[in-house]
Length: 268
Image 1 (cartoon, helix red, strand yellow):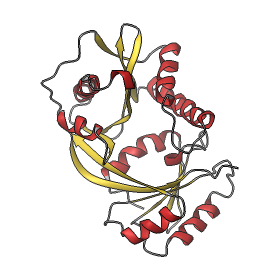
Image 2 (spheres, helix red, strand yellow):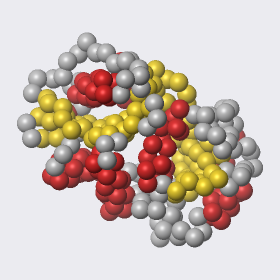
Image 3 (cartoon, helix red, strand yellow):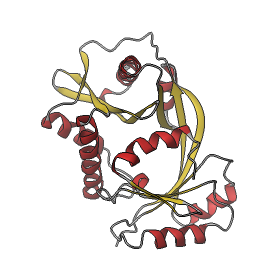
Image 4 (tube, rainbow, N blue to C red):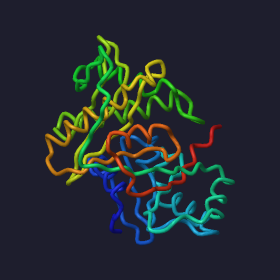
């Protein structure tokens, strides 16, 4: 299957580093052996959105393809944005316990802002064991709906072990915004063929609405553009979240919308 979506191409920066990708003809699978709890690292990819009545077939294909890997307990589907999904088809997934993600794919080749970083805030790359641990703590602080905190932290720890390996191999960096030694915000930026992809932009709740996120995205964007001339920066944002507006304010513009269907593991 040819991946024509810029948003999904940027995802394969990470799948190509740690994942196993297999073309099954009617769909492709992506599997992340070291992190079976990673919803969007263990999924089926289709060429187009589901039609009415596809739910049972897609579920059966997922169960068949992932049967040798029982540690993958969720169900996740993505598809190329070849056409708009049919609301009635998505409703079938919702009734079966799926959440439908709608993601704005934003891109830019330049970054600008008229609002400097707040006084006392410093941006720097994450280097030490203590800083990586602080990032994990920050990323799991708010938890995730329907997922027990211990499972969510396990997933994040494995994800950040992978990000750290990628950083060690020169494929990108994780960045923190610090007030003194306190980590108040963080994000990742990693690079593939002509593309730089931001990851997991997070600001501590008590430090939001201060311009820290905007200034951090601007700072790291300019770093990426300076060190990788001609690159296109990609940001994924919840289509209905206020953060989307922050990214657009520094120069990002929407180039496509992605949808996905995810059902967390059924708790015993």
